[in-house]
Amino acid sequence: NDFVHISLATRSYTPVIRSRFEELTPADRLKMGRANEAREHRTAEGFEEGIRTLQEILVQHPDHPVILGRLAELHSLRTLHAVLPTRPDLESACRYAEAAQAKSKKIWEAYAGLGGAYACLDWDWVKAENAFNEALDIIGIRVKSLPWYRAFLTSQGRFPELIGELEQVISDLADLGPSVRRNLGIAMMFSGDFDQAIPHLESAMPHHTAYLYLGMINEARGEYGTAVDLARMARARPGSEYVVPGFLILALARAGNRDEAVAEFTRLQAAPHYFS
Image (cartoon, rainbow, N blue to C red):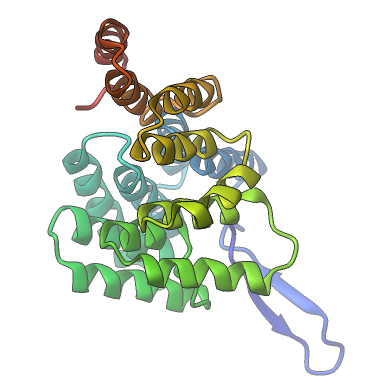
């Protein structure tokens, strides 16, 4: 995810790559890699590890605009994925983004972080979308399927637009991992197009979100026993700690398993990342 500026020599066309992290030590660059990997998990532990790792780098490079921007993006993204209560993260996103922009106006992560804050804290949809578009302009692409833009479109119920974006990505890129098809399946599920969503979600197995959203489809269709089974399979997968337990409780209750639902709810309330 390290976007680079490439300039070509006039005759030899030898690419000259200038990283945004040239001044970081090799150890700090390794930490950046760990922070990026943790971010991609989209879990409470992943976001916490990514933020902690970036803060460690920031101690050595307190004015580095990209590190500040990435902290803004992670705090905002953690809210957009409903991992932790919103206000502290969004306020942190604003602080880091403003600090990054004081150093440079070309940090796309800062705009992405501000977009999440404008949407979730201020409910200013136009300002949020303008910030997200500013991030895309800096990156140099017009793809609204990036995680923060995708979460924003989902929150707005703009599923036809999101589905079109994801279908275009799949059409343009032949060799894709399961994540894009999984996200397309999720968007189709939220739009109510269950039959179209199912094969995309099934292609993403065994990721926990595939089981989760297939379970939601079954719950919506009144197939509560199957929904419970899928929720349990989702819970057995890594990264399922913040949404799956809540859905399992719902599925158990809908299936008539009251005692087990109450027991799961009690267990969830005691969890370190519990939210209502």
